[in-house]
Amino acid sequence: MMSDCEKLLLQIASEFGCKIWVCEKIGRRISYIQGLKAGEERYLPAQVVFENERYAVMCEIEHISKKLMLKAKRVIECVQKGHLSKDTQKASQRIC
Amino acid sequence: MILLKKLRDKEAFIPHEEIFELLEKTRNPDRKRVEEIVSKSLEKERLSCEETAFLLNAEDPQLVEMIFQAARELKNKIYGNRVVLFAPLYIGNECINNCVYCGFRVDNHEVIRKTLSSEELESEVRALVSKGHKRLIVVFGEHPMYSPKFIADTIEKIYSTKFGHGEIRRVNVNAAPQTVEGYKIIRDVGIGTFQIFQETYHLPTYKKLHPSGPKSSYVWRLYGLDRAMLAGIDDVGIGALFGLYNWKFDVMGLMYHTKHLEERFGVGPHTISFPRVEPAVNTPFTISPSNKLKDQDFEKLVAIIRLSVPYTGMILTAREAPDIRRKTLRLGVSQIDAGSSIGVGSYSARDSQVVRKSQFILGDTRSLDEVIRELASEGYIPSFCTACYRAGRTGQHFMEFAVPGFVKQFCTPNAILTFKEYLVDYASEATREIGERLITTELQKMPSSQRNTVSKMISQIEAGARDVRL
Image (cartoon, rainbow over all chains, first blue to last red; front, side, top):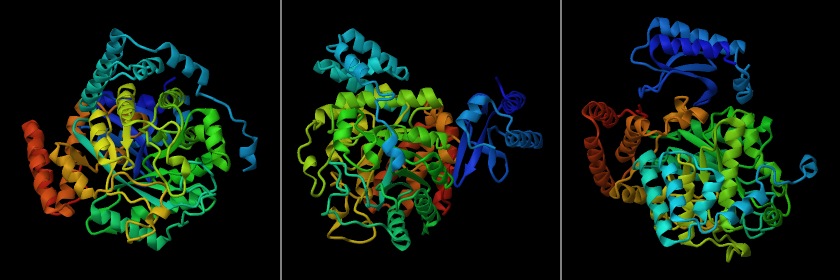
């Protein structure tokens, strides 16, 4: 079953026509959190849309708007609350 | 240690009988079957274990040539003409295992034991950076000294060492299997890939060749990368040491290991390594290993792994001589080391005892610059790119990017940009000349908008910017 975070990512990808994914910052490694991505490959450079100390939301999009940033912030809040699918939780036991 | 003694060794996800049966029933495959399998692979689909077995049993020279031709084509389709370069850095050769083929085994009293101090580590990293390296694999023996904390501290020290324009941007790790808690400590410093080689997947041979120490447990090692994945390390590398057992069985072992990781975690190994046994000081087993793999079979092995797992990186090290490295690069190898020195502490200091501090003896001792010059003159783009793991293109997500569109859009430009850095900062005059010509040729192949973007970024590098990437 799709988690709240996955639903939010899908909604953003559809609204902004972008590819979006969530990562954990581990030293200089920006590590993808399994299951947390949405949208088609755009072949654009990856940009950080929003980040806090632990997580980063990456996006392939031409222009980052304020609205997108706010939605990306909500994604991180969602991840921190642990609203993830069982698969993502299993694959990324470190989260929360 | 007590825990390890309680673990009962079993075949687990390497079903020996099934592998033997597959290798038996796929003998003498006909041309049509091989053609079908090769076509599937050229569509970039991973092969089943049975299909790999068919290829392993293709002996007819025409069929073997068909396999080689397909491997070359597939490699070119997916990876283009890039070759990723790295260097091994041996941190310490203390070891409590007794692997009969290894120079570091505990009973080998002719090997000189050494572990780098913090100052020596810094000197080694500065020496590597001063040659142009950006990617390392750090190697540790298996010893209580090399705890997860020690490994993590080593990696942090490497990342924090800067020299001139240079720095190490990605550290991969080859160390003993850890507990999940241990892996978490290592994961938290931001590693690239964690490698564990099973050496041989054949349980009875494994038991014979690993008589004591933690490594004597087959299952502890076999599930080592499962624990890494559970700890959140999603880029892992598998490997087998060829020459220990029947090579076809061990290729099948690699495939079953891949299948297991895909089924359990949704992502297979990031890389596969396939070293051959090489001579080591005071190690009689290595002089004439009972299952020594001939060059011709080794080339076939490389081509078959390439076709079986189209998207998995393949690593060939300087254990091998230059000639076989040239041949296998064309057949599927995507990463090589160069300018390697495997004696502990031997990058920064000349050491007449270097062989006695090494795990084995290298087959390719050319400098990084020499290797790069040769690669460039043959049309390969030497790449030090580390962009993906700094953009969240890791683990399962990474696998999406080994598609031609992505390679053309990102991997080739990033390879060119890191190569340009090398040419500006470290290359000899002769290498620079050949390299600049190659970059010009590569730019001409690009559509004009992309050419303009990359050209601008090249100008930034010429003006002093570093780590410029798409």
